[in-house]
Image (tube, rainbow, N blue to C red; front, side, top):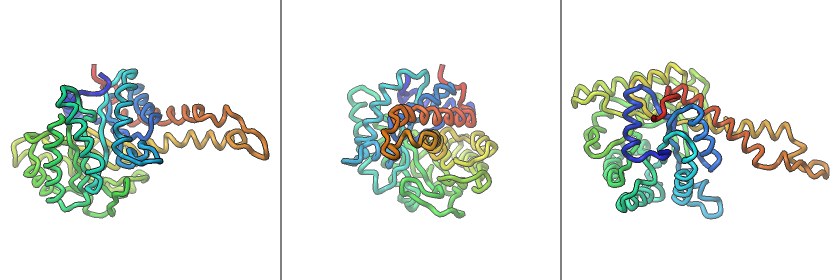
Length: 340
């Protein structure tokens, strides 16, 4: 079962939470980065999550007539076919979607999955993300509740971001300041608005100092202990222990100790993008520098077809990204934990 059914996806998340590990959530922008993600997960014997951002989906839709829905649907359908060859289970997810892109991305994709489910099939995607972190919390949660109801109709899990992640991703940016820490009051307001599963299952991207982008270890002040505080406060008030399924955003440059503490406090999904972009591009750069006069027709020469054939440097890119996926799975303790 390479692409998880809704029931299997829920079981995967439950198992991760109980086992205190998390799934690498890998952003892909092409069929080749998809294969790299699947290959890395398979080599690590880890299940995982494959995701597309709005920018990634638009890129996938082609530059002639850019369309996010076309790009997302095309790669999702492709994934349903090619994932069959990999001995792991993955869920398909859409990453950050702000308010101004909901009508051009998440809402149409929800309708597609609702139609599939109404005909007795499974949804095309297993989860979608609503990024309302740029909105006032009341407005954010009102939209979240509406989307959660639509997602539930399609047996889809909604991911929501209630407070900002610093830095910039796909045009959504936030300053790096004290607003990057979710409060207990934020958690209470979230429960009051969307419940604790009775209106549909959701993943929660709470903020504990997370920042998107490239940072050396120590340059970002993460406080994973905040996640424990949120879990304990909600348990005390609502009587449900470990209520939240947390998502770790902006993890590039995080230390193993920070990642481990986040896992202990309920993180079941960690987004991996920036580090994998570099791991994919670095072998290509190395190939181009090492084969300069082969990939270019220098001084009237004809170059070397074996050097500039995209399959040559593309294979190196796939291998580089796959190797970094293995490291991510090991760091998140999902390696060796694939479904039996």
